[in-house]
Structure formats: C-alpha cells, structure tokens
Image 1 (cartoon, rainbow, N blue to C red):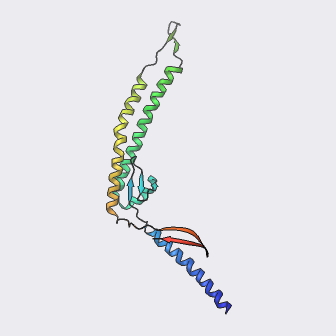
Image 2: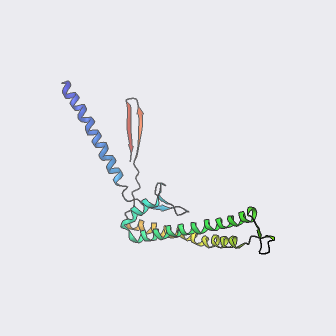
Length: 180
C-alpha cells in the first residue's frame, strides 16, 4: 500500500509542476502584444509603468509599418536635436577655454610680440546651434506619441486583470499564492 501512496505523491508532484508551468506560460502569453504609453521625454512605457528600450519597441512594432516609421522619425529627431544641442554647448565651452587659458601671443612679421583677442565666433555658432535644437527636441516627442497611438489602434486592448504571484508562509509550510 505504501507503494501506491508514494506513486500518488509522485504523480501529484509531477502534475503540479506541469500545471504551474502551463499556467505561467499562458499568463505570460497574454503579454505578447503590449499597449504602450509615452512619458514626457518620449520614453515608452507599458501600462504598468515599465520602461522599454527603443530596440525592443521597434521589434514590437515590426508588424505595424506606419507606427514604426513614425517612431523611427521621432528617434532620429531626438538624436539630431541632441547632437545639435551638445555641439553648441561644446563650442561655447571651447571658446570660453580659449579666451581664458589660450596662448594669445604670437610674433608678427616684423618680429614683435602681438596679442590676439579670441573672437566670439565659436560662441555665436554654439548659441545658434543650441537655439536651433530647441524646436527639434520639442517636436520628437510628438512623433513618438503619434507612433504609439497608431500602434495601440492596431492591437487588441489589454485586459485589465493582472496576475500576481508570491510565496506565502502558512502553518502548513510554504506555498505559492496566485492572484488574478
């Protein structure tokens, strides 16, 4: 009789492992297509607030070419705006450094030492780049927002139910608590 008891215990353990695996697989399969939201800086989040990398967002949008095109345009605008902004800041700092620490003396054609003033050209170009980057940086988040709206229209709405699992200690031992 003990053999049947052990067999039943073993059967229960194997069945429960398979059941838990199938349950977890099915619960995560519902997240195959995630509805996205955008933050103020053009970052992409899911409905639970998890932030996604651009590479992963592009992979999710591969079946929605119009949304992917808008998203790529928005990301390119962000990159271009960042390059313009930080190049402008860098040119201004280079001009400041040259004016403060640069060697401004040279020998003219007659052999006399002369002092050369540092002109504001680099600072002006840097300022223009920073000012020109502002509309570019403001516009990229709108493109990303449009792409997310286009993507969310193309997928089924996500269910409002959430599945959470936790380990609970009871008087009988440890157990897995699953909430739907």
